[in-house]
Length: 282
Ligand SMILES: [Zn+2]
Image (cartoon, rainbow, N blue to C red; front, side, top):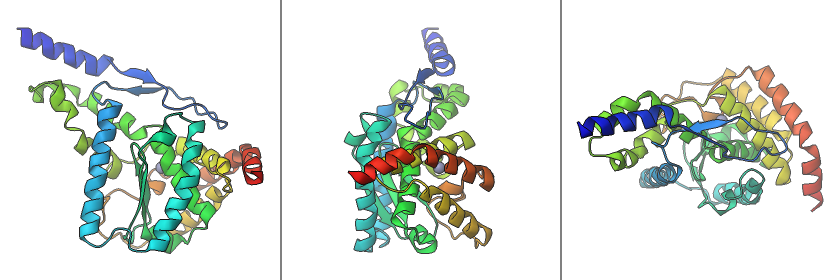
């Protein structure tokens, strides 16, 4: 009987116990959507799981000779990240102190991502096929970093935990700790299988242009990057099997209409133009 009560209590916690959180400050771009997180997916445990999965990805790539093969590329993405990271403080004070990592993966796929807690990968396919300027590459990285600042992946995993809450809890008769230890697959699922929502993409777009401007990169580069990306998508060849399996490249994951996205990026890069001007004078 006591066991039943315990399960009922956990089910209740998972279903109604979601906490409303504010992962980030509004910034000049005014991101203020209320987010909910499940106590089944605590930030510390989720970020730890992400860090572990990131190391596994790097090891696997290294073994295949697909990690950081071109020192100039590695230097380039790390240099851009180094300018961006201090500016994450505009959205959350703790972020500059995260254990950030930036690596280049050899893959034809046009992709880049940032795992929870600041674990970044840029694919050589993006560098080779988009030929981004530094400003454009910054736009990609700022967008990916913004997903991590907003903890979009944890939010997604939270919603999944709540939807599957009862099964998870009954299955995890070993106790609460058993659930927490099992977050690695959840990280991989949200990173590589599930697309972000349009709302998440829009938030990452807007925060990305602000990060760019604060770092002294031209925020309008997000517009030209997106145009290059959608042109490429029009003549995209079938994807070879890659890390991300069936998921389309992150940047394209939800297909807001090109026009709408371009318009939004233009609008928001205009809003942060003064930040860009003052960053350039420094
Ligand atoms: Zn995105």
